[in-house]
Image (cartoon, rainbow, N blue to C red; front, side):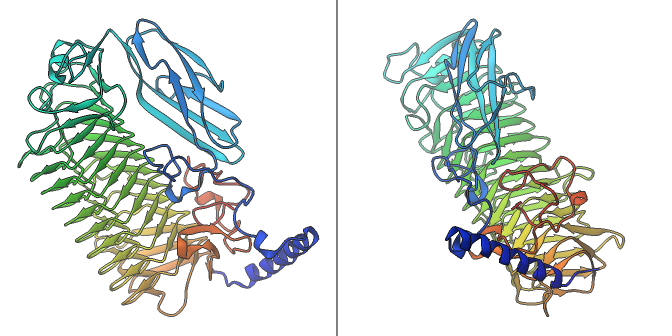
Length: 588
């Protein structure tokens, strides 16, 4: 059965008296008795994020530990001795280095020396940890042990003057270093590797090395030539590509794979799908890349994926892209894995202001920020429709805020789905034109669980300001909402917090929600266990700070048994369970 607030009020009164006595003894004011870990120093990377991607990617910007490192040298031939230097910020007491990104810790030294004895491209990862949390930095294809090295200089001071000439002369595991300049015209667009394992890399990064397609053609065109993830494009600005009705304005991958790192893809356009990139029967690995201001007439304002494709994105920013169909940033009939990335200001005419995924092998979003995107129909932030049964979609430690849907699901839209899991995530200040301001789950949706989340300050034009559930095809199925806060949502119609339609059933366990008149509605059933009705006492919810105050009724009121296996940290990266788990996305 649900609880009243009588016990938490008494507990908070005792805490208040104790805190007040301590403060008076120290000569402090009540302002010092505030929110979570006030002694913790909050360190933001350049650009004011909370992660390691371009401009910082951490949702909410609450990172006390930020991993960073350098290596020297990063390329050469023969055996290569690389000195790695930890440059992490915050209080760090342990280091775990993975020199070849195989998931095995290779060193626990702070500043290790490592020898690469075999030819190839190596990604490197560093995980640091301390009393205030942990963080991971990954640099994809960072170390290059090459068979040979050549240079390209548009001004004639290299081995070649055009990019394609250097590619044609290269063999497997040759490194091509491209000097500063703007590369245009024949030999510098519609580039193809002919299946070779080549790394084409700018010497000084994308700000100084530009491939400009001048509104005619693609930058890279890998079609049925068998490139692999060892075919690498690293450190370029790619702009002004136009592929007409063809998919993938700047980069087209058809039965060919590629790794794309440290790039900026901007101002590219197609009348088809994929304003910047299209994967068709292919795999791409995209890291530390900004994809902005691209346009697609069909799906995927930035990236379009189809027919058995796969993509992994790490530390990326996708912003201000526009799709005439679904997926303002990404439209995918494919498998997605996305980590530590930002989706901001993208627009879709159809579903999925940031991401639309359908008929696919599932999606994973971890440590991502989905903000201020818009969809003409459903899923202002994210839209998942009829993904493959038996595959879990996972949304973990994400911040989904300020998104707008013209119809259903302001933050997230789930339909005819497999078994998505949403955990340690904030869904706030989103709006839907019709139902489900925060989350809309309908039509045989198999929403597995919403665990340790915050659903707050969302709005719906009709019903279900926070959460709307409508299972039209299975009387036996239930949605579980565990250790979660549902608060301050509004609906013009019914169910400010929750609306359960038709035969759907929602189970609320160890959660805090508002149960005033008009908050819970619909013909479906809601069963709650060990829940609390009342104000969760956010630090500053009106300004997207959903940490808990010291007197919050959510403190140590969750259930440890409801935290999914393998979930070890909260949205800040702090330990998820310390004693009894808190209700909401943050431990106190």
